[in-house]
Image (cartoon, rainbow, N blue to C red; front, side):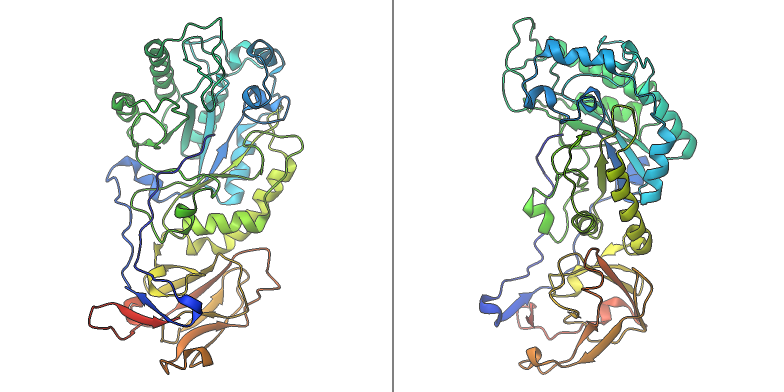
Amino acid sequence: MAGGALATGLNLGIGASANGGGKVAVKAVAPRRPKRFGDGRDWFFEKRFGMFVHWGLYAIHGFHEQEQWRARVPRAEFVKLARRWNPVKFKPDAWLDLMQETGMRYICLATKHHDGFCLWDTKQTAFKTMNTPYGRDIVKLLADACHRRGVPLCLYYSIADWNHPHYPNQGRHHELPPQPQDQPDWNKYLDFLRAQVRELCTNYGEVHGFWWDMNVRKHVDRSINDMIRKLQPKAVINNRGFDEGDFGTPKRDYDSGAAEAQGFDRPTEACQSVGMESWGYRKDEDYYSDRHLMRSIDRYLARDANYPLNVGPTAEGTIPEPAAAILKRIGKWYGAVKESLEGVEPASHLTSNRNVLLTRRDRTLYVHLHKDPVGDAVKLKPINVAPKSAVLLNDGRKVEWALNMVPSDHVEQKAYLRLRRLPANEMANTVLVVRLEFDRPLEEIAQPASNADGVTDWQK
């Protein structure tokens, strides 16, 4: 797994307020939504929450998926792990059961990470699962289960390869130093890569996505993605390969621009792992809190982006209990609030409150408290219409609301909608989502006065 993000946020014209007391100039313009593909790839816009899986020889020691590089393990020593690869407890249906219990709707498997070990019966190298005590084609086992259960399957593939003699390792980021026994040849390596990609896109039925990683050389060759699209027309392709691909890939909330943007110019998939140190299995892993992960998931799904959450199975093929428990807890939350995240449109432009996100469906508005609530009330300025109903999706309780002027709105002398007595302390370890239903189109629920420039002045 590598860093990098090309997703671009949209500026909706929301200004800053000095000392918290001035006016905030806001142009209430709905964010543009990423253009749909208009073909079989549009599944990507319907099934937004997925499972990422990093799995390979590195699970045996349980240090990191980049063990060979980060722990400075000589290649000759690392490849010996293949003699111990025997994940006898791997059951793809168990993975898919957990995936679906969490509310996830697609899966992406790391078929070959930077170490070059292949989880399928490739004819291009002997460094593969077939030449191990396990001796079975893992990609086929998972693909068969996915096809049987109607789960879209996406395949991760690392361009960097620490095992192949033709890959030009030069000691750059995520590369080994030059290996004396190698014969670096980029063109020959690309022939190898193309042949492997063709195998993955030909021998395993329908594939819904191809997830490139680590194009260290930043080499451009559109013919490779063209081949994938010809062989697998429903496959969405990310932007870490040999051209810009179909979607951007901010990672682990590292990209503050993507994390805080009000929307995205192009399809976006933000990935995260449950483990703080590793994407592959780590024996003494430190895990993110449920709250952190829920907020991250909510923040991207509410803005029309996708989100695969990663787990690293053990060397035996099971998902570690702490990781599985995290997914199950997230699943309970997601099951309660998913109506606010699936089949909805971003609508945060309807409020000047940047501490919440809004999504909508018809005349229903969903309020997402994806940041730490500073109190038990949320003001939805400039919304000035009473809702027909207000319900906390997390547990179904009714939410108290008020439509009156509060002291902080003394300049405008106007009343705005507030949600009150929210269980901010009681439910501090989750993301609260409130469903508001109105008796009129949502475009009519906020009617601030506009100045001569057509920019609305909303008092913060």
